[in-house]
Length: 116
Image (cartoon, rainbow, N blue to C red):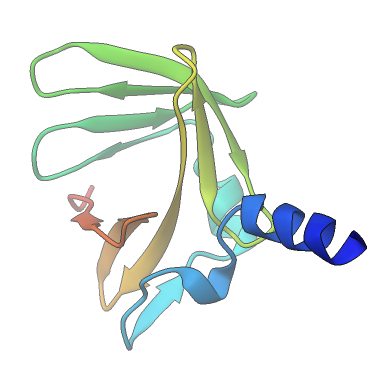
């Protein structure tokens, strides 16, 4: 019985660092870099913008101008987890690949961030 409970808990836990779809040369952001997200807005090549505010507030503004709001936190595996006000949540991993900053979502999709 304990085995089944343990298995259920493990399967319900967030992705671990080993499960992220990183490629050779990808370097996850350090704790210092992740903490440095506060106060920054990252713009993607589709013109979407992720804004990380001090205190954990988060917003994503689509190219259309519509926005989604929530909060963010940094998980133990170095991923950035977003809890949207509408109940949706997700975690992403930011990596450096060469000179480029890339967001990797839980499905393994890669979204490069425009240079500032």
